[in-house]
Image (cartoon, rainbow, N blue to C red; front, top):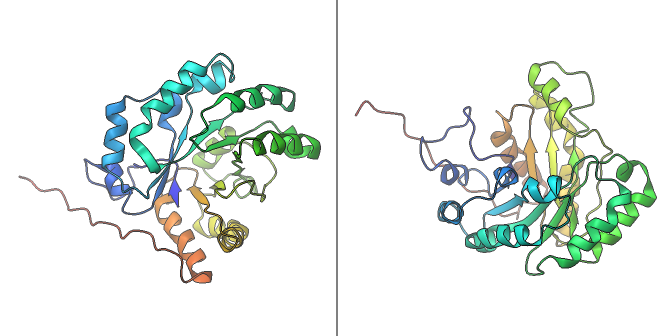
Length: 272
């Protein structure tokens, strides 16, 4: 369980070691910062030092690879990125390839060639946003076949709850402008499915919208899969609490589920 970020002004976190504090609330994070630039290896070492070995990072490949080069002529950049992530060790749950909305079913050959050449010692997960992958069963099947060849996962971004009714705030309007409006997917391709779910400002609507996902996660766990679920809201202020609430909903059905860590209390600031 995790969120799209490990720090937020609304979350109870110390001024330092924000990732370490975050990791006492949940046990996974979307590493979106890597999309904008490959971090230094010292930065990645600090991430590893602040998290236990069973913590999960799903690290997004840099936009240079996915958006600017569109998966071509980027072998050196990808290998450099993977080398920099080495200090994470087992914490690196998946290398996340988020493709632009313009990356269409006609581009699947490019994706297949890219995945054929990536190092096999990592797990990969792909997020597509072109509507044809969701509206055309043949396009979806072809993508699944490409991913199956390398045991890669398809990451769905469930925005159904967000788009269920008109926005009621600036945050919801902004999220609707940035997030893809595509059909919901419930099919896992591997033993390690990843789902991104975004709700609304309303906690009640967010919880109501994820009911299907609770059932799906229970099914996956019963099948022996190891899913990773990321909770978003339009402004993410409540995302951390909601992630724990989602885990509790799954635990209510599966009492033997491993619990999340217990949050560490944040000391109030002092004058000295």
